[in-house]
Length: 382
Image 1 (cartoon, rainbow, N blue to C red):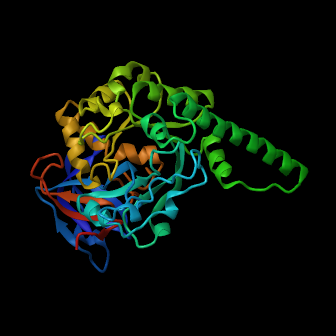
Image 2 (cartoon, rainbow, N blue to C red):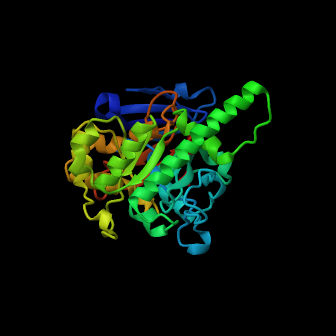
Image 3 (cartoon, rainbow, N blue to C red):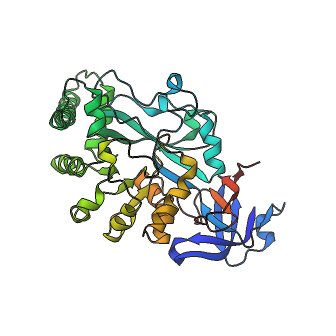
């Protein structure tokens, strides 16, 4: 397949430039000012004239509950939160993913091709997040990173859930205790291996070892400024990789955030102020944090707000002061990097998966339409 004459989003070029794209076997092979049709191969290939159209990578939501909190299905299909315990590092979202969630097809047709599916926020430690592409009938076939992060939560959600501790102090203690348990587990496992003796595997602690060894980050649900600071405090205490999720009060502590190299996943923003800690939610936050040098992603937090309006949330952030190119990065390149899938997703470049969206106009225009979506070169809009 060759897509010709489109305005292609190339970050290294500073935005949209007229280019052709050559795709073979699901991968982008070449992007150039002109590609001859003969380069499609001896048997020829589909040639798409995208003159006047805008072309972006598939959008990525770095924090979602799609496929695990199924749209329109009610409580019976909501596997987002498990209320068995406060600390459950042994749970994995892959075991709750339903590829046939009605939201998937709608999301893809809106240009969203990947998401990080996370446990809900009512547990102090909710389990393991999985990065998936929104294509496939079997969860394993969708997975890009089965163990992408450990999900934890601070603030109102775990307080309301009430697992014995009903304060921020108590919830912070539970997280620290889980980390300390993992440190102890790691020591005992190493000693058993040295001695050649039997050691019983603990699924949850094995997941926590990935966190301790900095192979995956801690995704921390935090809205209020003090909760953000507590998450940073604990991450620094244990030298953990951290991703700050929501960061509703980010503007009030932007100078503090700028001192640390932790990416921020902002949102959801286009929803009523449903609880006290979301009172400060604003589309202006993205621009303020970005100008301070903080890497940002924009999330729908589906199904809090619909994932298929992800481009609208990014556009609203641009309208409120975020640089346009940074707004495009916040739903493509940046989430791919945060999720560790940037070797395949997030940019239009040779060697990347052919996840390509063709828009009728600029993605942030109010009347733009998604005309075609390709995932690994396959047309998903037919």
